[in-house]
Length: 528
Image (cartoon, rainbow, N blue to C red):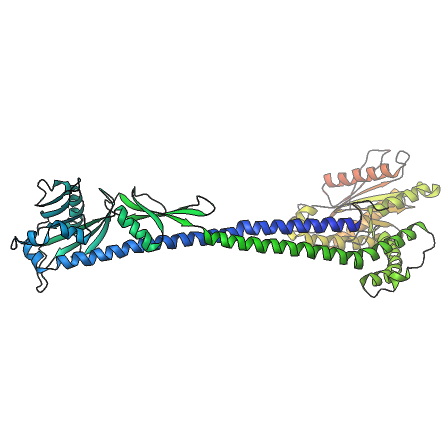
């Protein structure tokens, strides 16, 4: 019986559940790493746009200040006043009602030499003052005047300017050179107007823009000029730094903004996510049901049939419900018996291939050992049997120099040469290592085996396969060790060990030679 987890139905169910979990996880990851960043980026763009609107509102007020200061600075009476020609200018123009009408905190005039000429405004106690220069009681204006005079002294362009003050209080400043309206002459001085950013004015700005904002003085800092903090699921705080005087300070706009767009987009995405998850679950359940009806049930019938084939000696008839199907399962069922026949033929072919080396086509070690053991089992043949061990000299150098493909060609060429020289005599040539070959010579004495080894060595040398990097010679050579059955060499293992020792003696004595192993006496090298 099929185990619970071995059942294809249960495995498909577990697999589909795993797919469902992965799909849901993918949706969550997409939401977390794709959708949410987009929503947050859109929210940041919205916050930046709202700050832009607030900054444009401030810019609009600065433009109003520019027009106001230009009207006064390009007035002939103002020009004559700073030149000392209209003393009545103060009484007729510079009185408290003027500042209230213009919503100004202070006005001051600079002479042509950039010295304070007249100052009018409200002191720290809110008292209206008007006096020449910065003599008391107008010394309260020194900090603002001293902040703006260097701007003019540094070569301020001869045109109207606006700027913002962060200290000593938040304010808008309009600054313009004083000129005659109908004559082209150098400026007689400068006129400055200061409008404080008071709480009533900021409240009016909130009503105009619809943005809950606060303005404050801050120290100018490096890095991003904007910051965004999500203080709750429904609101976020956005801030921006606007350059102001003095240069080390700035005016900070803090806006409390709703997160309605983000929440609406998030709800929409969640709704889509829930529907997608539901559709995915229904789809997977439908797929599972169809899989059971169309695939799993026929496969279980086919599995029971194959189990009967395994148990019964006579193959039972194929179930008609399977053989009559016109789909892939029916085709599989009808061809199954043909495949069994084909498998038997393939097994026979594989057995044949398992006994031969796939590269050279000669026998492999498995077949060599089997034939050697079989030959030694016959009493009459056991006493006359010899073997050769053949190793290609410096084959690693050959491979490194000519490449492994050339090395394969070399192996095939030498194997064919050995087959041509030894197979006609009934000898078995086998590849028993990477560059190592063994030859089984049944019914052969040591002397005859040595003659065949010399002839093989000569035939390989006659091939003259180039081997430029061989220390032995200019062509491919081999070292051959020969051993035969002796009173103290009676097993295949002993004979092969003796042949191997003879082969290594051939290598030690200069390679490209034949060496024989004579256990009963001291071995002597045999030249080519």
